[in-house]
Length: 151
Image (cartoon, rainbow, N blue to C red; front, side, top):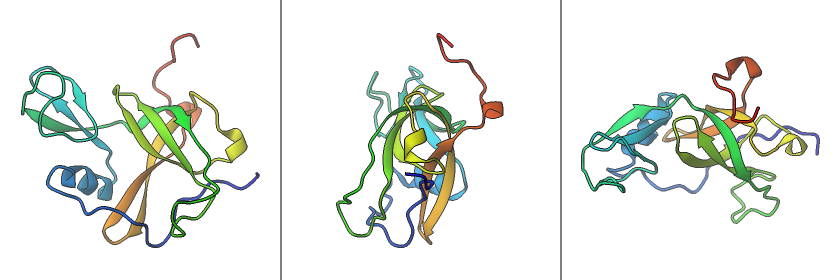
């Protein structure tokens, strides 16, 4: 396959942001990737929670992510679960530099170029007036801020 993966277009089934997730989605609309951190024990919480999974504190605050990370895992979808999705698309688990994982989609790369530990960075795509999604694209070598262990 020689075509670059593209963001989805048009309507996509999605949940309405709730009290717990609104801050995340509002930040995406502003072009920022965010996560929660516990003030008591410093543990990262993603996806958002009301109570820290590590120490049960309710003192959680939102922080901005660098949006940089490495590809942990992915799959190539050729048969979508709903006709609203254009194929192929690549759901992926990203290891963010801050130390948490996030599921998203890869774009801006050919399927045959995808590899484990691929450096990636976040980009945002507006699909609807109320929906801006974080996608991940290959990071430029000049954007990388750290060496991986063993490299």
